Image (cartoon, each protein chain N blue to C red):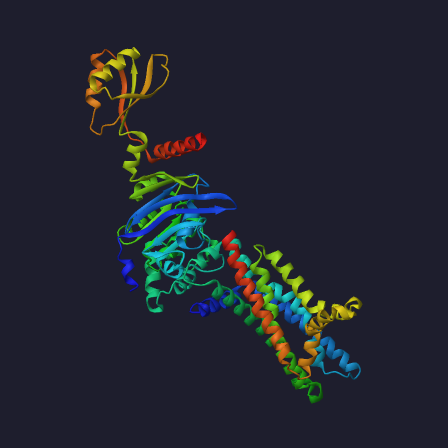
Length: 253
Length: 329
């Protein structure tokens, strides 16, 4: 792991000097700002049951579906397309270090972008002056959920980039996998054909993988170890497959 | 312990190397050795297996069978040690588009474990050697082909590895830049072991101590350029433009040395002159006796010269010979 930090700092640096990072950040912050003002407008018209933070973080899938492919599609697919993966892997670095370094950089940027939405809450507190609007519980729960689920979402993006040479293919693949992960669970949870006794284990597994239910638990302050394990094991699995994907392409390319 | 293999006189030893891609043999039973400090040229038509062999040497692609030892370390089991000892510039010289030259070299130096303290002076040194000082702050994507090529070479020699492998380092360079690269490679002689592949044959001939010609994944010839010339084309060749009876020509040649053969001749032109190529397995100069014998036999000579075959002739003859062998099989 000697080169992990070299690659990580290099990748973060490269992300910070690329214009596409700033374009993505502006789009992200405008989208989330729009969502946030919309929520505030609703609250100003009539009292609501849930806190604004709760409603805000519930929209997490919007940026995840678009930002994660944008942030990760380049990382390994571009190296392979340019052929720089060959010069990279003929230095004393391992594939694991390369994949983890790129993963770490993408995750750092993802966390930084979400971290910047804390500014919305600061502005709300500064100008609304109404403590009831700021419920710290759902806010902290929301950020913890974003941080934990982001581990898996970014790992899926890296995996999509590892198995493809083309950035566009990688981003579409990533979008499809994230869509399946986020909405597939709730869709299958409601499906009638899964209700038979025979398919009970499948039903149990589907109930376990409900991303929206995980979010609700986190925002209520319930941090279930099983849910943490779900994201962590998923992350490890996706990264392992990414490493294997890069090495398999070497063997057969 | 680790430093002992580095003292071996043989830097690279390849034995019975085979690489199969989906049933097609790209490299077929290739064996050769390269001595420490030697510069070896790798010649072959497109698709001959040059790049594949080089990739196997760097440990990037595993071989199907056979063994490769670099500085005494086997590539298959000790790829970490190999990667620390090989500077590699791949075919087409892939570089990141959006980095500055000095940034790129710094990053690569860190990856190649050059100590941080030494890296700055070393980067200055390679920039100087590769004549890149003027573009050190330019973005690589905006550089011309010649500069990009030199950035690739600078990167390969950056960590001062004992073995340098470059796949077509002079492709796309202008004559002035080729001269710089040639001097650069020649300056590595004795200090580093270098393998280069190229299509520019005079390049190889001028820079390399030894040449290896490969075709269809097999080695068809290897040796110094001069030895290859002798082996493939015969020792000496003479070219003359002459008019007169063909039988008298043969008599005249018989007077000089019965071993002198006519390798090729053209049809006579309007004035009756033919271009004749003679070969003989002797190194000493036969020009004067041949000329005198021709004049004594009343032949008219318009031009006479001792031909100096280029590596190109050797290359064409050797690859043709290997094609013939494949066709016969």
